[in-house]
Amino acid sequence: MQTFASAKKELLTQAKASKIFGLIANEMSLVEAEYERQVQSNIQVVNYLGDYLRASGGKRVRPALLILASGACGGATAGKNVISLATVMEMLHTATLVHDDIIDNADLRRNRASVNARFGNQTAVLMGDWLYMSAFETSLQERSLEILDILTRLTRKMTEGELIQLTMIGRLDISESDYFDILKRKTAFLFSACAEIGAILAGSTLEQQHALRDYGMNLGIAFQLADDILDLTSEAENLGKAAGTDLLEGKVTLPLIYLLQSEPSLRPKLEDVMLTGAYNEISRDDIRELLDVRGIIGQIRERAKEFADAARKNLDVFTETEYRVALEGIPNFVIDRNS
Image (tube, rainbow, N blue to C red):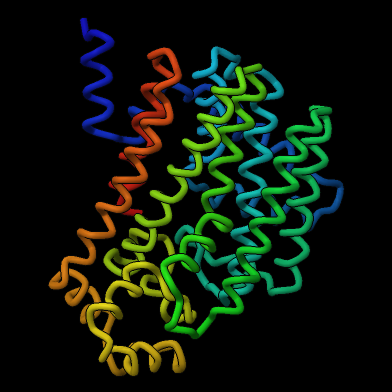
């Protein structure tokens, strides 16, 4: 029989989704059912769009994070409020993706036509708004001012992050500090809110709540660093969207910040990519090779691992249960993934 220690070692070594999320497979099926219920409306077009978005799938990392956080604090994992709020977090995430795709003029999302590409920008804007409002309507049922405060603050920060990024589109003078400010607002605060709300629903101590809030922040940063590497190194079929789009959209990520510091002569070529929206003067493969030669990919991976290690360190306040072990495995999963 496999011991708890050997199971933990296997999970942390393999960092596979099936190992990490298998623990809450039943809860995740409840989230899917709740998501389906939440996007039902007496408006036919809303039903159709909701089904289209739900069927697009996704990793569902954020609702899983909320459920595992609740379990790590000794709370219920399949309770109605936990499943409901886990679904709320996925709806908020989906709403941000819908709106982001409009801003970025993205054609693909999860290997399917994005809502804006398939149905038009007007429809996509309204559907994103509908998802936001539906998520908040559901969260109101919890009657928790603390949770509502987290959600409203989160939504404001995500919107601010998008606005700040828009002011920096097409600029190559983005600092590392600017980059991390946008990253936290657009990505990490959502991870942090998921983990913190899971703790609140479990009736955790303040120490546990803050530990999970910080865990989610560190995890979110590691996740986005890995995502930025994938945009420059992975193929479109793995990403589920066009590869190399960040630079085409005028966005400078940390790998490119480091590359410009190392190779300032590349500035005109990268500016051309952003200006024309095409890899004419330099190819994506050329950029990937330069990143490898200069050791920048390895450097960014190390930064991601540092935040992953910090996330695991945040869990030291918890008793070693299967839920804590699963949370310890997620950082490896998010930085080792290929999509």
